[in-house]
Amino acid sequence: MIRGCLAEWGTCSRTVLLGNTPVAFSCGNNTIAIGLESKDIIILDVITGGQAAILSEHIDSVLSLAFLPGGTLLVSGSKDKTVKLWDMQTGGVVKTFRGHTSHINSVSISSNCTRIASGSRDKTVRLWDIQTGECKHIIEQQNVVTYVSFSPTNPGHLISISDSKVQEWDINCHKTGPIYNGSHIAFSPDHTKFALCSGAVVQVWNSDSREIVAEFQVSKNSVYHVNHCCFSPDGRFVVAAASIFIYVWDIATLDPYPVETLVGHSKDIASLVFSSSFISASYDKSVKFWQIGVLSATPVMTHPKPTPNASIQSLSLQARDGIAISSDSGGVVKTWDLLTGLCKTSFQTPAKGSTWRDAQLIDGKLIFIWREHKKIHIWDTEKGELLQTLDAPEIRGLRISGDGSKLFRMDTGIMQAWSMWTWKLVGEVKFERDYFALDYFCPGGSKIWVLSSGNLSTQGWDFGISGSSPIPLSDRSLERPHLDLIGSTWWQAVTPLWIKDTATGREVFQLRGRHAKPDQVRWDGQYLVTGYLSGEVSILDFGCLSS
Image (cartoon, rainbow, N blue to C red; front, side, top):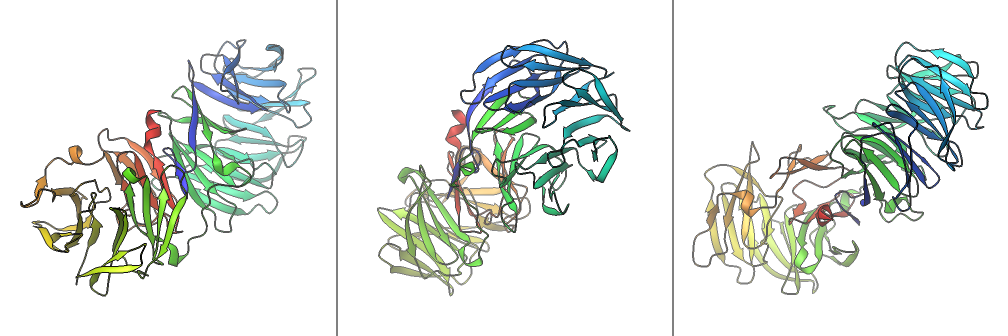
């Protein structure tokens, strides 16, 4: 079971608003340093998020930061063409390194704390002696240097990125090893792997064999490019930022796969870092602290490799009862607690392999319906008893109404509503156009929406007025929650799904991973529940959006 706020992998536990745009980010022990466009360096406490100090000796934007091991010293690179070494105890500058003729985009410190490396827009990498302040070596590049770092696997070696080419240099500043394509590189904590960002793709390489062990693409149409990535402290997850989205992949299995997407920032993310929590900084002038349960020693969320006989086939959401209900292709029906995310009950039913199905708690009874052998079966799940069967030679959709009073059955050109207790036909609608599926987001009461083929437009009807024909619903924005699935069609089961706010037109987040079909999604305006091919269920609480 997975539960989250706006994202299934974690929740935003704290947001710190900055007075200016952050352009550099580094973490040392329990301290965060943030370089601002305004030339200041803000120091935050990781635990409280409170501001501990402001360092103000640069005369232009601070573009890069790096802590020395232990966090007692900090190195900064600026648009003012200088590198500064700071004493974190006093907040004063220990030494200033001058020599670059343009902006300094990146700084790094050697593991033995004797050298500083800086990469600049002047197309050079410079190596500085920390004690004397002297420039020991200059490495000429063909283009602007966007990144430089001392290699964690080869002490004394440097890694630089220029013109999206990743190159390693030996202690004498000679090129060594292969050239990789990438705009950013990150190493796992144990240094056995490194991740390269290139366009919309992230590749994870084995440091020894230099073989790709995982590869992910955040956007098939390359709209979003990955600008930063990092590993979790246990090395299990790779996290990457592209635009306002934070993508999470699990690389601990033989078949690495995307877990989910975190959303919370309103502008592009500038940097990511792990400390006692996961932290992101954005051009929206905010820093967000994410509470990530899966980073603990005993993960609270797992995504096992999907098995064909366990995929989620139906979901229902009953916030009034505090539960969601799922059924899988093995015929198991489960209820889930919305607050804790725990499975409350589990029942085996005869509905193995059937496609059209639904379940709901009605007047204290857990009722499960499914179609098999050209009949709809109505089942009392807790008693294990068949209550009724209805003929259904053909079918395109099957759903219990939001108030539990009716069963909706859809076929080509027609939709029928049957009483859940008398089993009599109580309403019928004949379509003037082709509708191919019942809507994903089924509201409460006796209202139902259907999707048309082609442009995925919707039409709704209200079957709740006794003694009258179903009433067409003209304005779906007044009747339905303001969310839609985009970027995927109903039959696609493993492609990413964008969730869009139909009121504002904004893409809220992207649902990733091995999710079940998009029609196995339920939404009531606060909770969004989704099923996975692995048999898991995710519950997203959008009530966190206002907190």
